[in-house]
Amino acid sequence: MKTKNYFGISTKIIFSLLAITLTISACKKDFSDDPIEAAGIGFIHASPGTGPLDFILDNQKGGTFSYTKDLGYYSAYPGTRLLGVAKKDSLKYLTNINATLKPGIFYSVFVVDTLKSTKLLVLEDDLKSPETNKAKVRFINLSPGSPAFDLAIQGKDGSLFTGKAFKEYTAFTSIDPSDAYTFLLKETSSSSVKVTLPAIKIEKGKIYTIWAKGLSSKTDSTGLGLTVLTNK
Image (tube, rainbow, N blue to C red; front, side, top):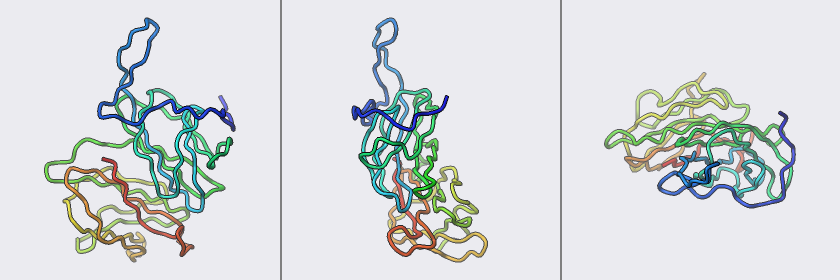
């Protein structure tokens, strides 16, 4: 069934901020109040040159977020849900997608590509605790039109992740914590460093996503860079 291009004017949020226990109480046909295990969902703005956006779940508008920002996880009923974004205060979708959310699973929804080609990239987040005295990190290339990139740590041999083209991503990987890592974004084909991100604290027990942002052709706030998102 074709999705609608417009959504209702109601701004009632039909999900709540994620609590410590990820459950929703809902009335079933027998009117019981058995808890339903919810899914966790977070929206991240990774579309360079695109202004503030409103996120939408099942045609209901939620919060507003700007470039490189996220709103944390929200709880949502599991099942097939209509996810979308619109320009702030607009009633027309920029893009939307039907996604199947599984109970007890967390998802990151990245708004990617440039304004004329906006898309949603839905990733399942592995939020299981890292190994003892470790952190977990994954890498995503969200730089439109970019070549494949590697992610490396200054002073370490080799690269942490290699050969990720636009919209490609890695699994979460355990790394040692540090008070001041310098991350390097390298072009895979030449190993040349394109971006450095210094003085990043990676704490034990925490989970992070590091993503390449922006456009190689720009030198302003929409230029090529790296951003760190704390998932947990």
